[in-house]
Length: 538
Image (cartoon, rainbow, N blue to C red; front, side, top):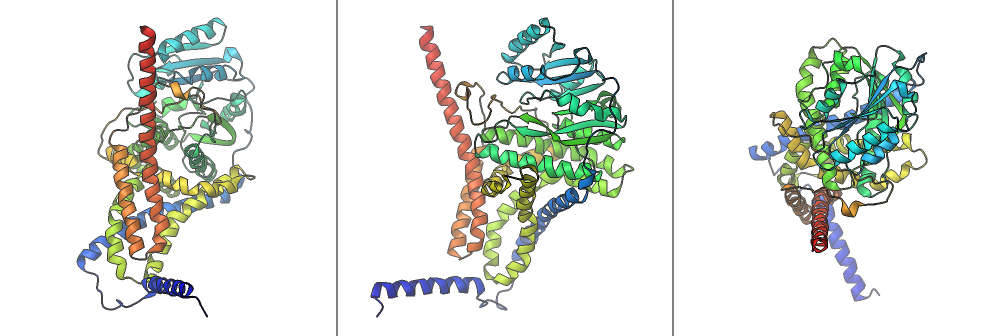
């Protein structure tokens, strides 16, 4: 005989199972409920947006296909070498980079190249104590016999592009190497890259980024996976297939003649590197990508720094699309190259589309309450597969190509990767909209702290101040909206949507609360330092 508590438990479980089954498979409303014009007004834009997003998802699959299809065309050793090495100028653009400057200069001076063929330019636009520190360091190294010169501008006209263009006025090299302040160039960098320019049609040689602080926290792990996807699959596929790809603004070499032929560095976009890249390739210059040559760099360790960086890239690439797509459409280049350029320059439009999709999601869930599970599977599953499964395939395959022994650990970071992407939605949407409407904004630097590995070093006393403004509060609002949708999904037994909705909750809350916590920590440290200075001055 079954005990009464056990029998009750079985009955309750059966009842719950029955309710869930009915919610999923019951066709009671079939033929009764008819969609109204208001329902269609919600459903049509919802699925239209999801369809556009799925196109970019399918493009990820196409990139993977191109990568493997053209695998044998990857750049190898240069076909010939210079009999006499050409003169080279290394440009180091700075703006308030106090904490990484010394490391940058020390590592740059170790680059192996005949000193009489080398010029190092420190292009400093700093407005803080970096200026005096950099000038003193450069003077010290110059007195030691290194070919280094210091150039300081009293204005930031043109930002990084303006500084690079100004440096070209006194450049003595035929080629320029650019390293951002957070990069650590390897000693053999030039000797492994310069000989590719023995082909007079080559205008750029780009190398792969690696990361000094990949394991610092979950955010840096996620960023490394995102960037590896770009450098392994996107650059790999485009360079092998003969499509246009971009110089990444650092860790690469450019032929100065190519820069001049393409119209020089221009500062009407925030991604001057992509702008110049497309203008040069339209004119017929070849770009070479060397994935086997990596240049270590430092990733942003804080959410808001990551968001600011991504905002600049999203806005700048959209500005490039607006500026360059008319020229590309009219250019005498293959249609497939034009199509790939379009997909490369426009993916950030997905961010404002995601906001629109998010706003429609709850009312669409309500409207679709009367739809059966099979209708939802037939309509939703292909779109979701194209939009979201492609993300998993793309980044897992990139890690497998780059880290064949440890690539499986990528699966553990995929939820955080998707959540981090969701956390960029609001700020990147703003960037895209500003670009489309021609709203100008300054080139905002990404704070760097000379962090390597998991060591914080002097993070506690850094002076960089973060001003996130309204952003985290909007993210809290968006996260709460999706939290309500999770509750609604539970109430309506729409359990398959819960993992998807939870990623939105986690993404928005992660972005918001980590930023607010970091700013609180900064204020507390600042007040402590200020109090200490006050006590010392007594």
